[in-house]
Length: 277
Image (cartoon, rainbow, N blue to C red; front, side, top):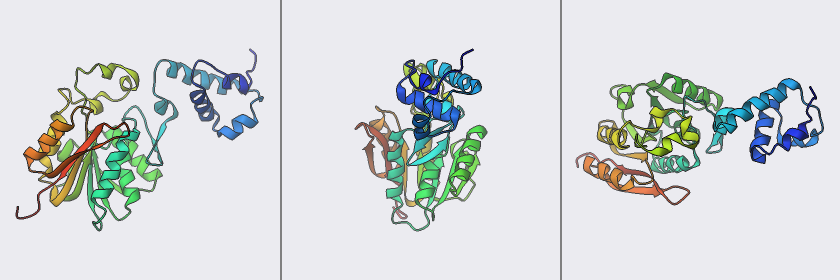
């Protein structure tokens, strides 16, 4: 069998050029500059075979993040596996809002419910080294990924296993609770399209209409927030009004939504009433 040259694979038209380069960088363990300087080098047959294996998976629709094993979020590289959702840029508005909420709080206590890869909790912990951050997930496999990311990024986060507030030790109070819970309706056709086909179904949908887990988080937040603390939730493109309604009905004040990069109301939140009110 003829040994392929690197430039023959760089010219592969079965994928976009950027994806080809990223896959080659991954299997070779080399940066882009090396690829350009060695484009006429013969490839080890094992490396070529590894590339072809990843190519086949990509052509079948598997997300690049799972093939490469990582995704950037808030300027940090997070390891991802099929046990966790792939962090998305739109979720960065949740982290940015969270940091604004605790900007004037010394040593804030923060809870991230359903942490997955840990991207939200770890990003907050890295930006606020004085924060006491706790992150929960019902999936032990997801928590293992999150704990590995915290270790790699030297972030101080306490991980607890369990469903929503059931994972939180008694007596814990928080200045801020954040969550990116399952909010896709179980009959949404997008679940069987694109990257969503490969992501953990339980992290995408609540198995119902999309508001079940959002409602549980809102309803239980008052028992875990300090007076004047805040709750912010990511939700679907058409759920902002419904989530604001849940927050207002539960007794939250200053209820509002914020837009994502596409101008869609992507997160909603509010402030828990102060003591004596």
